[in-house]
Length: 304
Ligand code: NAP
Image 1 (cartoon, rainbow, N blue to C red):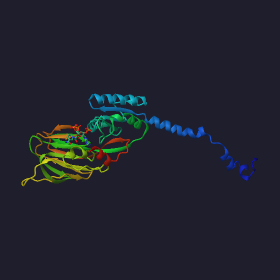
Image 2 (image 1 turned 90 degrees about the vertical axis):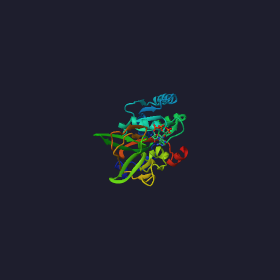
Image 3 (image 1 turned 180 degrees about the horizontal axis):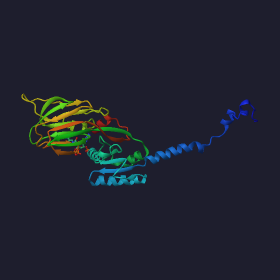
Image 4 (image 1 turned 135 degrees about the vertical axis):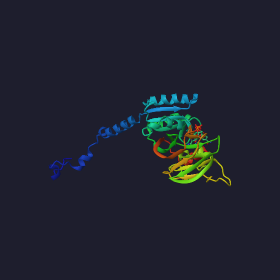
């Protein structure tokens, strides 16, 4: 059909009908999309490190994981990884976090459990293929968990440490007296074995064994629980766990912490010199890469 001469096509404007009838250049259209997919795939090829329990099964799992990630084009880099895999359990995950404490801003963590699942671990050891498939092809939901910052002072010295689950003061050799200040005000004097201050994520760990409440994820609260407190006519303290605001500052003071230990996650040190311990939730946080859509309460039901 001959093209109708109109005012518009005289000006060089092509009739709409003709423009639509021209077959689209598929190659041209798909090119940007292919480039985007290529870029996304490339950005998914990351540097990884593996921290594992020192048992034979975990060692074998580490080798299997490293092989599979290598086949997918990933590079093992223990010094500056993008993703750290912890193979073992929640305890191994804690260990891995402390290993990379100075790089938390740049590192994400994935947990693989050699038993069931864990609060930090989303994959069982028989799900290695699924884990590799997820990390190499999908973007994770990142769950962040802030760490406690603990400063112990005394004897002219100061020591600062970080904890993901909790910090505890424990004295099994003699009754520990401690004054507790919260947000600059005296709260009470505690007598007994010790105290445990946990984060939301640590609420299912030692805190739970002390009868503390489990705190749902998304509530970055702190919880202070007694470890075998003494309660009778002469001495009383709150006795029940105390849930505190995220920004709370807790100070524990004593004329002597001799014989006591400051325990934090799987670590501890002796408090013979110290007389004051200050704790608050720091800005330092751990990024847990979650590829599985498992609600917190569902996880809790499976694990307990
Ligand atoms: P560990 O053997 O590494 O861990 C002891 C147990 O606590 C293990 O079963 C571990 O799970 C579990 N766990 C660790 N973090 C957890 C969390 N956030 N929620 C639920 N369970 C958790 O022992 P560790 O090296 O001495 O200490 C590491 C942590 O274990 C501490 O931070 C403390 O909270 C916890 N712990 C608890 C108790 C207790 O409840 N009486 C005693 C000691 C230590 P996996 O088996 O998956 O590793």
